Amino acid sequence: FAIRAVASASASASASIVVIGSINADVIVRVDRLPRPEETRLSPKNTVDVLCGGKGANQAVAAARASCAIDDVNDDDDHNRVSFVGKFGADAYGAQLFHELEAEVDLTKSARSTRGSPNGLGLVMLADDGIPSAVVVGGANVDDWPENDEVLARELREAIGNAKIVLLQREVPERVNIHAAREAKKHNAVVILDAGGSHSAVSLELLSLIDYVAPNENELQGMANAQSLATDDDVIHAARVAVGNTNVKVLVTLGARGALLVPPQGEPIRIKGMTLPSGTSEVDATAAGDTFRGAFAVALAEGRSDTEAMRFAAAAGALAVTKLGAMPSLPSRQEIDRLLGVHSTCVSPRQPRARGVVPLQFASRLNSMKARQDLFTYSDTNVPEVINLIKRMASVRGVSSLFLNYPEHFVDGGKALAAADLRRAIRSFKLKMGAVCVRFPEEFRLGAFTNPNENIKQRAETLVRDACRAANDLGADEVIIWPRYDGYDYHFQANYDEAWDSMVASYRSVATSTECNSLKISVEYKPTDEKSRFSFIPSTGSALLLVDAVGCPNFGLTLDVGHMLAAGENPAQGAAHVAAPRGFF
Image (cartoon, rainbow, N blue to C red; front, side):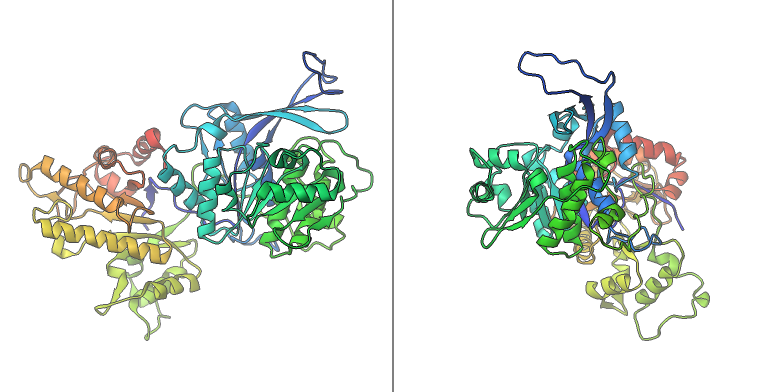
């Protein structure tokens, strides 16, 4: 098998729950009481505690710990996966928090700041009664999301995938939440918005895209401009004022009083506060609301009713107030089940592997299965050859994904193979679709994107668009183009400037086309080939120049280690050069 280094991170399996939000370093100061205006208080404790926090990170870890794994044999199973999507600072806090959080949740769609932004901070004053007051400094949580709406939407689309639940908070810009909710609804995910982070009303645009909004008492009071929430009737009235004539359910946490779920029509659901476990007391309520919402998301993902989900979430929230600090207080599934009096059959989900930039995965193009057919003795005679090759690949231990050549693997005996049949075969053999790889047929032997015949060049572009259409039908997120015929055999044979301009125009045309603009389009350069002695893209440096010239956010490189060695390059150095200015997809 060839080892690939790609400039686009291979998409990990879709998580069941995706949390998009903030990550903060919580700096906790103990106070006997909150200071009055212009008053300075001396803390009874001579040191501060610095802990991992932020509403997004808290809820992601709360959901991960509340999730149920029946066994830990297959940690790649999507069922209980929780993914966090956020922006970590470029400072020491960012590095520390990324390291801490990757032991709990999937961070493959999160990133460190590329703008030098500091990490978000939560400045928490914790009184003796365990009630916190805090000021949040946004940092990278606010500043590091893509400014271009198309780029932001694509980033969130890839992060959400086929999630069941998407959990949002208001410690990130509202435009991030709107784009995230819009992408989530395209895939029929349930969207929960934690109202924390702002006491202002939620915009009608965002309300139209979500299923639940979850404020606490103070947040609901601000959203509805209510004078008092002393009674349940007050809460119900304020909830309906806050969401107006929308179909949003309002999930209000009321501290020790419990919680209320107010639907658009019908009777509200009321649950009482959960009694704390024997021998414990309320120490720190910082993460109680985040724990409640993370656990509520888990229960919904498991198919529970709203009432059952609220009881499950109330138990988790009660446990969270018994320990100091946001992250340390988040309970495990076994603790939640125990408080509910349920015999737990769950084990803690296996911790994710340390991932760095992307998780290590192994894949192969289907062509690698053609060799030594005599060893493949269990092929079926009544199915297309491609199906047998997929079956053979599934028998290779450690390979999880496959790459299909286009058009080669989409025809059999001159007849087109339906994408639905290929997708069904891939899934039936427990494989995942990687990328569709364009392999130009012999008709392009005088060039594809550099062919002097404009009609042939247009056919090459059409072939790539057709490959993108096939990729979308298969659920792939990437199309890889190998420009095998775009080269020359002798020095001074070609007009290099014209060939370059022709390539740039064609790559830009396909990358921005309707068929391809939602996919990652990458070029896999090779310095030399029997079909063209010298390539117009002979090196990593030339390939980077091409990416810059094309200028499309979904256009990048696939770095083939074998091709880089053929070019006399150091693959590790080449990958570092690709990552340095722009990072991976």
